[in-house]
Structures are given as structure tokens and as C-alpha cells.
Length: 122
Image (cartoon, rainbow, N blue to C red; front, side, top):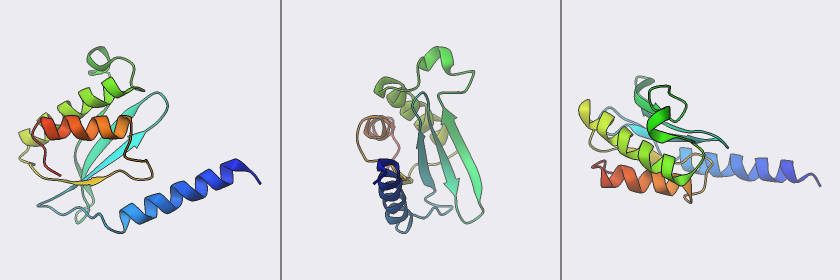
């Protein structure tokens, strides 16, 4: 059996399980995270209108010097703080956390903890 098919199946099931419970509304938008080997990013999305309200990524040119390498927990924590500041600047205080297919561990957990400490509620 090919291990990639097993891992992809697990990832798809996890993503489906999370997404059927998490929806973004104008009062409580969805905070969606994306993780790759070298970068980390997230978006605050209003699912009713289908619009991204704010976002942050380690691949942004303006943040590269501040964040450094985007594939570690330190970068994820810095991005969590930056996202909380950007969200509060446009009036967002509470969000629904959508971890997608990623386990709540490592970079995802570091990002969420930093965003909570910076004042974002979820």
C-alpha cells in the first residue's frame, strides 16, 4: 500500500471534519491557516460574502526581515501577533479557528497561542 494515499486520506478526513463545524460570519469570521515546509500563512475570511478581511504570510516581502525563515514555530508565533494586530485594526475581536487538515500541534498551536495573547478571541 502506498503511504501517500493513506496520509492524503487522513488529511482529507480531518479537513472535512473541521470544516463541517466551522463557518465564518460577519460577526465572527473564520481564521484559516496554511502551512508548508518553508512558509506559514493565514487569512480571516467572511464566508457569507466570500471575502478575505485580512491576511498575513511569512512570504510577504514586508515581513521577511521581521519573521525570517517561515517554517518554524518562532515565525508562526510572530505571525500570530501580527495577524491579531491587523484584525483589531479593522475591528475584529473574535474569530472561529479553522486549522484545516493540520493537527493542533507545533506551528499551528504556536500561531494560535500568540494570536490569543495578542488579544484575538477564539
